[in-house]
Length: 139
Image (cartoon, rainbow, N blue to C red; front, side, top):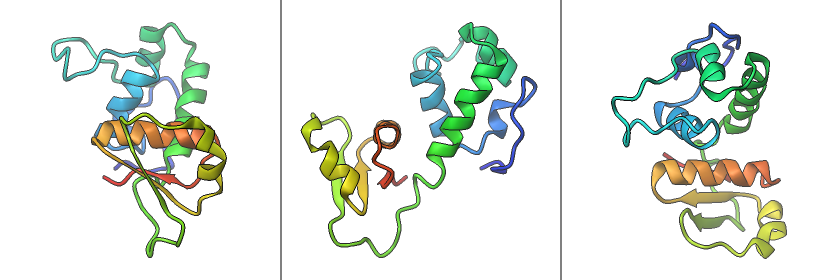
């Protein structure tokens, strides 16, 4: 994985982001609505932050801001603390969740989201965005 201290600007290569290739693909697909490589292998893919901004109609500044937040939120998302603390919860990505349980998830010492890798990463990021700072998605 690239160095976490990368400086984001219009010339920054997307491959320089401190995200795995799978994480980068999920972010491009779900956050920036870039057609997934698996479904559109011949589609031109943005290679830099500036090209991503141009492809999405966002300013480079807004694209940099969003990517910075994503990188910060995803930091350590695949490294589950060991040993797992008592009260660890496991959620399965792709199953229907009872969102009334969100306060319980926020209070849990650890929430592990399992399932298909891209889906689990996306679900853990969503939980982190909604206040479940202890959400993790193992590789």
